[in-house]
Length: 417
Image 1 (tube, helix red, strand yellow):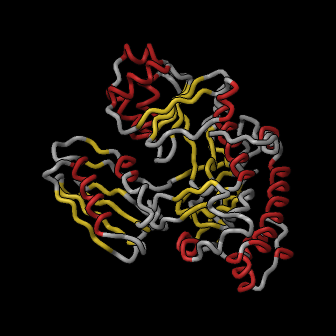
Image 2: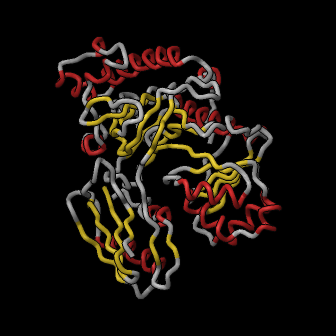
Image 3: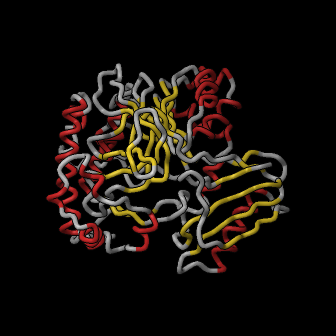
């Protein structure tokens, strides 16, 4: 989880306490570097800059960043692998693929230096909530936790529990681990809160709970906090940037501004504090596959407040993100959105998808097919959905050229039952 191969990222622990002015100057220094690097090493960005009549010499400040057009997922997918910088390949980098849940699936390459920074950011966010090297952390998620080099030295022990297990089994495993921190999807945590017994809570008693991936609603936060007797904090992340922002103990969401630049735009122009806008981000560290003014697909608002915790990192005031629905099986059992979305993760042949349920016994799946899509993949997906929703359910596949978006965001799982 924390690929700390050098000490270069450790200044992040100091930077978070610097003034907003200092952090802004740091961002601009990193911006000048990454823009120049992308221009000199990425065929895609060099052409994009030339089409706009600009060079790295035109980019000095955060305001200058707006001279560069925004980049979409569709553009990056269309121009892969030309977007990759010289000297990097899929074999020499950590390669991931987005789920396609935002409307488009893209392949992402991260270099080692970027991974160091991501790991430190994640560690910084957890330590802000009181995590110490000797504490245990339980991750309830669909896939195993990445290897943690620090664990070999006896620090930051991580345990993984599959999120699609029955709530009773998850609770049993959590009791066996007795973690200091539980990291979990909000919808899964809500189900656990509804089913866990008071006796189990006394044995478990986590210091705090961290949620991510899905929107944390006030109702879910309140329910989980009341049942588990501990605070719930939220984190914001994305495959393209890993840890984007974290809540401190004051429950204010801090942007990892020493690793990325976050813009909030409406019709291409910056919004005022508190005003909702489409989020555009620039990765200041990933040289292998630069993300400069990248449309992430979320909506939010920023605050110009200074947090009482003392950190100079800027604040997200509101984060709407992508709001997904829970579905139902034929018998009325709840199917979490995370369980539906993760079914598509193995299929790079699918560029985008959307799941719609209007009746308990029928699920419609909109799919944007990639070049290598086949009938075999359709059959596999239908079988997986039937195994979840019931053998008597009808699974219908609709093939479309694109998934419609509303107000710049894409709902992936829609349930109207």
